[in-house]
Image (cartoon, rainbow, N blue to C red; front, side, top):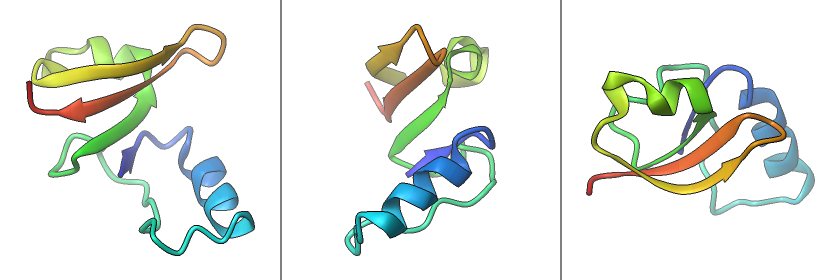
Length: 71
């Protein structure tokens, strides 16, 4: 899973708290690298780099989006 830097601490906190051993740690890298699932701010999702992303979930309150690579 890739994530923009705003969400990395929270994702890793809940990953550890809920003992989600199946989930790999999230690092502060570009979520557009080779990740399959991306959690990012909505602004990144709307960028031209995100053209090949399929929106799975959008949250207007946190201004975030969950997307999947590919069509």
